[in-house]
Picture 1: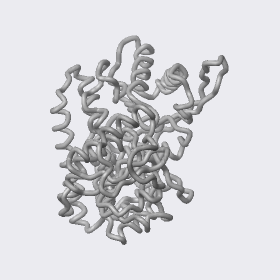
Picture 2: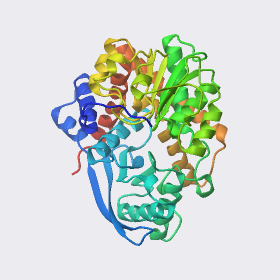
Picture 3: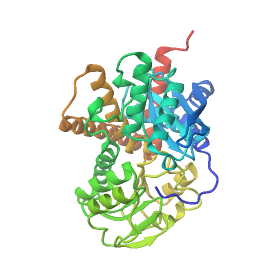
Picture 4: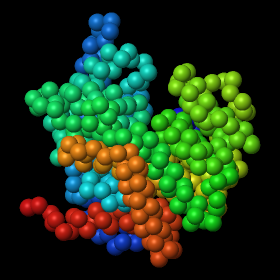
Length: 421
């Protein structure tokens, strides 16, 4: 996932700023704003791992619960050297709003370990994961907190966590995590879910704005699971993928990069987009500034910021990443007439199908892939229409409308449940 050089930005400050921006519109009093501005539970662990050479290293990990008023908390686990307490706080808050926007009975959580997973052997990764799972086992569970994959983690990571938790409980507990392999209770369609949700959102947004998705020129920043799946599905739908980026940089071809399947195959083999692929090699900053119909940031948070937002020429931005646009950049983009579909709506496909997986695990009854995709599209379409209705009624941006919807649902649940005791 390519990154850009951004002014110093704190993700949790950005998340709180977005919440404050909508507080006045929905009449939040100071007390309720204070409740929602803070995470209810923050768990930090420092744990030892035996390395392949016999040495012992201590790693730091986090698991944070933002709000659980609508149900058990849900959110991914990421392995990255950039993991920090404030990043995880922000991601957990965004998960709360995301789950509420699409109507899931979840609150928001997030977690991570400060580690470069590429620098560890598979054995070291397994030992790190199992030890971290043991440390956080006191706060996770199918009725409490259900982790899922995120940046630097995958189905194998979830399988190790599920197995570790099950061994501690003395029986198999598949519903403790989602994003697992299908062979141990995972759901078909989960791997592609976030990217497929981006496709469904793009279809709705194009219809909303009088654009045709077929023939639309698209640039995708970040070629991990979400970006690669979104690029492939958009290409299949007739869009023209003109630019892609990964950790090694970006490639651009004005009339389209061509066979996305071939790029995917090469990337799976080499771990990055090969240097020899046809197209001009450009910087990440240049990718973000391309004259395209749709820009899809699918990398890290804070990629579009006050230092580069003015250079964005895309007609539409669909946020496949979490928090890719800072509040300062939002103002610039809005003034320039760029239509932004926010992360808490656009990339919700992953948590929707995670919800499906959790339900299937609890019932021990599994669905066909067409049923998963049909239900996903129905939920994504409904959420888009609800956000659009608020945007039109309030004469605001899609982000503001999504926050009005999500935050209002959480506030309503808090008021109905009351403050214990």
